[in-house]
Image 1 (cartoon, helix red, strand yellow):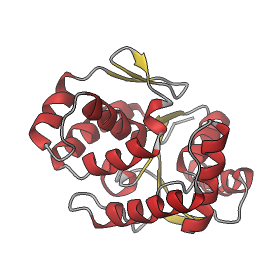
Image 2 (cartoon, helix red, strand yellow):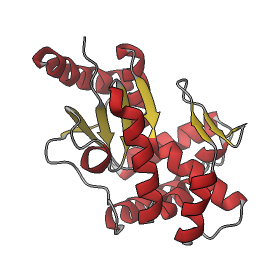
Image 3 (cartoon, helix red, strand yellow):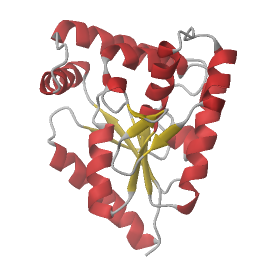
Length: 222
């Protein structure tokens, strides 16, 4: 059976990566976490003490950066597994900053499109359906209230032994939403042909089942 590409967009902590992981297991597809790629760029810039608005040096850094996105979801930066290091709130905000840079986005989008040429990939982020995979036959736009997303992030952080102050996390999410929807290049927006799902009061399985119905309908039409 022909494999298709699936685009999942939405704001921070809406459940994009979690659902992409579940779908990849059910379908036997590869989940390419584009958000993790931006986080890796941000982490590398922070470590190299490059200003997050220094587009010229960040683009040059990306050209020389050794980044591996493994099929199990691991992110290898310069030979080091940074899968956990890129998930802190500090790097989350830094990733939002570097993602504003047109040169940074162009470099990573080209990389992502090349990877997905064969089909069978699930990508999640904030401009997948509108920029990276504009021709993807299945486009999903996940949303949830800021409060619901903050509660999820608190739970995730506690499980990882990270800082988990609800009010601080809620404030960061609201700030991140504003940054993502108001950035100059590829702002967070719903593709015209994307199907929106509000995950605020849905379990992971309920969301995954809803998306699978859409995917199976599309595959049946192929």
